[in-house]
Image 1 (cartoon, rainbow, N blue to C red):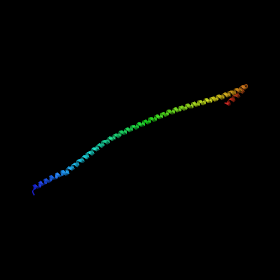
Image 2: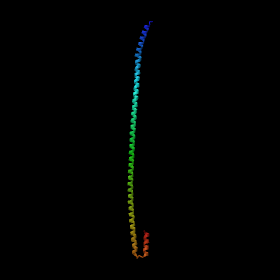
Image 3: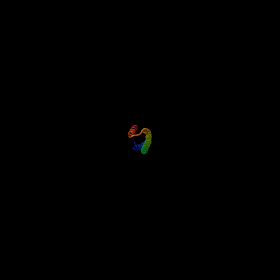
Image 4: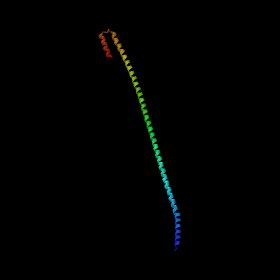
Length: 156
C-alpha cells in the first residue's frame, strides 16, 4: 500500500471522527456544561439573595423586638402610674372616711355628754328641791346643815 493513500484515508477518518465527536459528543457535552454552569451561577445568586434577606429579616426582628420592649415598658409605666393613682385615691378616701368617723364619734360623744348633763341637771334639781324641802320644814342648825350635806353627798 501506498503511504499517501493511507495518510489521506487517516486524514479523512480523523476529519470524520472530529465531525462526529463535534456533532454528537461535543455539542451536547457543551450544552450540559453550560446548563451546569448556569445552575451553579443561579444557586450562588440565590444564596446571596438569601443572605441579604436573612440580614433584612434579622434587622426587622431586632426593630420589632425593640418596639415591643418599648411598648412593654410603656405599659408597665402606665400600670405603675395607675397603681400610684389608685393608692393615692384610696389614701384620700380613707382619710376622708376617718375624718367622717371621727366627726361622727365626736358628735355622738357631744350628744352623750349633753344627755348626761341633762340627767345630772334633773337629778341636781331634784336633790336641790329635796334639800330645800328639808330645810324649809324646820330650822337649820349647824348639825342639821352637816347632816343634810352628808345626805346630799350620799345621794349624788
